[in-house]
Amino acid sequence: MKVTVPYIKGDGVGPEVTAATVSILDAAVRKAYGSSNALEWLEVPAGQQAYEQLGSYMPDTTVEAFRRYGLGLKGPLTTPVGGGIRSLNVYLRQTLDLYVCLRPVRWFKGVETPVKRPQDVDMVVFRENTEDIYSGIEWEAGSPEARKFFEFLRDSMGVDKVRFPETSAFGVKPVSREGTERLVRAACRYALDHGRRTVTLVHKGNIMKFTEGGFKNWGYELARREFGPQLESGELVVNDVICDAFLQNALLRPRDYSVVATLNLNGDYISDQLAAQVGGVGIAPGANINFDSGLAIFEATHGTAPDIAGKNIVNPCSNLLSGVMMLEHIGWDEAAALVYAALESTFARGMATADLARLMPGGTSLGTREFANQISEAL
Ligand code: NAD
Image (cartoon, rainbow, N blue to C red; front, side, top):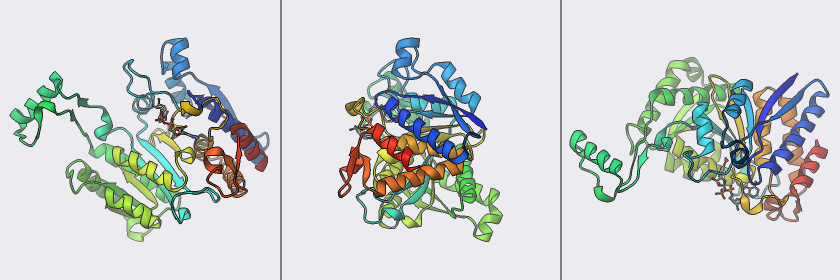
């Protein structure tokens, strides 16, 4: 079986982490399936290089390739300054309606972390990707639009709570029943499919009663309506927690949480805190997925790291583990398991790229290419 994977190399350290990822995934697939399975890599243009050569940061042909093949791997991209695109990642998520940002968080033995029991952190975050205060509906302080919006609030909505109207910027936070339901549905299905019992709705509904509170209420209603038998039998438990309490509990008793479903902004903070608990974003994978169409783009969670680009020192694990999520997504679990085991044995021997090795007692720093070779050998 051959699976075509359109991939964006990315800017900055992107080409280095992509090269490492491609070589390790190919080696794992060969090891697991011999010549019967293979990934066929199809490079598609995006980012700075695409802009210089084709005049577009994200050519339509690239978006079409992801649509056509139903999946893709993406290296980090420089966020263009000006040019009408706020962020290429946001553009891709919105254009392809990739409504879940999926961030599994687990610890690998040997990786130093700031917490005492990183092995207790084993969570999968479902962050809503298309709504919330991140929708990009906002107006700059002092602009005619901000003035108009304030007057609408004051004159038509009877709002008298804007403390400093002349110097206020405004943002809008849309949170919908549909948007909530498709996210919570995906989280519940995932929990059942992966033998994870608890789905926790994380929100600030105590303060933002209709948006974040709506998320909580709609989430519970959806769970009761669509997963009644599983809730009754105890196969699935759905509960909720206020976001600030969650952030504290995630440090104090992380074993209480398994699958986490949350809104866009909360999810942004939560994913990075949890990543830090197991070693940082250099090793945290991610994917943006539409669970209805199945379309999924797997990507490193860090940026282009221009300060270390081209130096053969970048840690490729975030991109690599995103690629491993892709193997699991297409059902090639044997190859995925091989990469996990190879990473584990390499870290356990104190070998890693400099960012992790310098924290390991007696650790050995390897260059990006040497680390990738080491993983391929360990396979
Ligand atoms: P960054 O993640 O690129 O770098 C932050 C720091 O972490 C830097 O010191 C960097 O050297 C280090 N770092 C990051 N990844 C590392 C890795 N894998 N191994 C070792 N060290 C690593 O964040 P930034 O500097 O804020 O952003 C740089 C550019 O990347 C910006 O243009 C930003 O918009 C873009 N960005 C893109 C994405 C994406 O494409 N998904 C995500 C975040 C930022």
